[in-house]
Structures are given as C-alpha cells and as structure tokens.
Image (tube, rainbow, N blue to C red; front, side, top):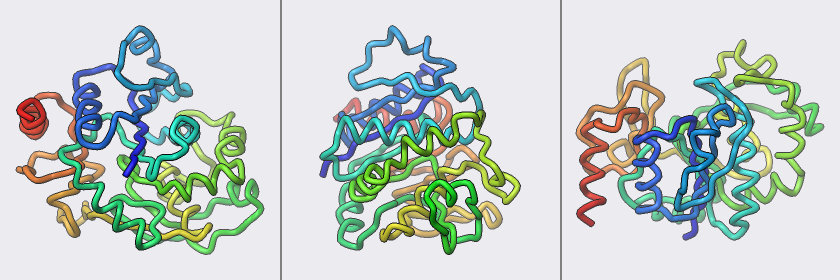
Length: 264
C-alpha cells in the first residue's frame, strides 16, 4: 500500500512539524509539503526530509481549492504509482497506520474518495459544467481537512487534463472565491468538487465517520477517525488514527501521540 500525502500549510510552526512527523511515522515518507505562496519565505531555506513546493498565493483561512488542485497534480507527477493520494491540512494528526487496512477495503468496494461527513446535496456548478461540457445530476460532499483519493480517480482527472484546465479557469479568483458557490451554502469547493467528480466518472464515496454540529454527536468509526471542522479536539482519543482539528502544539492529544512516536 503506497500512500502519497499532500500536506497543506500556511505556517512553519511546531504544529506543522508535529503533523509532518506523524505522517512520516505512520503513513509514508512520500510527502509533498504545499506552502501557501504568501508565506513561502518561512520555508524557502527550511531543510525538510520530504518534498516542498511553493504554492499559489492564497492568504486566506479557508477554501485553498486552487492549491488543492496544484498539490494533487504535482503529487501525481512525483508518485504516479501511488495507490492512494491523501490531502491533509497542517492541523491534522496521524496516530497509527490503521488507515491502510481501511484503504484496502475501500479498493475492493470501488471507492474513489474516502473521508468524513459524506452527504449528497444539490449544489450547482455551472462554470465547472461549462468547462467539462457535462451536467452533474447531484453533488457529493466530504469534509476537506483529510481526504483520500484513489489512483484510478486521479488518473481519470489527468486523462481529461482537469487540473490544468481548472487552474486556468480559476486563475482570476482569489481567497477561495468560486462563482455561485458560497451563495449556495458552500465553504470550500474542493469539498464538493472531487466527490462529485468521482461519482460522475464511475467511482464511489466512502465515509469513515461523521460529526453532527447540530446534535454535537459522532457516528461511524469516530474513535479511530475523529475528524471534524470544529471545535478543536479535546476528548480522550487514545486509539485514533486520523484526527482534526488540533491547532496547538501543547494540546494533550498531540502530546500523547508525540510521546508514543518517541517511545517507538
């Protein structure tokens, strides 16, 4: 099982380095650190044990969808033989290698996108449909902080030159803006974009766990995959594999998993 990870960050911080170390320990050393171009100087002279890339200038605390596209494109060039590509935000954390078994199961089920909070809705993408000369019957959603994409799906996007075309299409847009998306209740178009494309081209979507903000309640494999938009995790997750958000270095959860890594 070969996993290539795009680790998106806007800061060269202890939290970033803690997350990077957790990825290299439990998933693989095939990591592309994708830096918001606004803060590239923080990383220009930094000697990392993995690849790093100066991303596009974003400078906003949400919706880095153009850098997501750039990261997937570049990761597929670096590791064309990867079984899965993982996009992950800097304030995630990896606590074990358990995801590899779930990815094997996902492969058998024909899943092309795997993550948290799966739902189906009616978001419209008129500009995207115009670019692809197609129509989507419905939209699909996964939480964007940590998502796994099957190689088969990424190869399909490369086949239609999706990344180049999408980056060209959105070249004039900044700070996460995408026409007619936010007005429909969207937050980051990547969260709808890739699951919708995966289903459109024949794949399935898989859900690891779900967090309901309305009911403040978890369902699914939440003890293993406590990934949510907010608030920061504070519960006692001692058997977790993937976690989000953990925005402070001294969070007890980070401290617990850091000691586990240090103790082998």
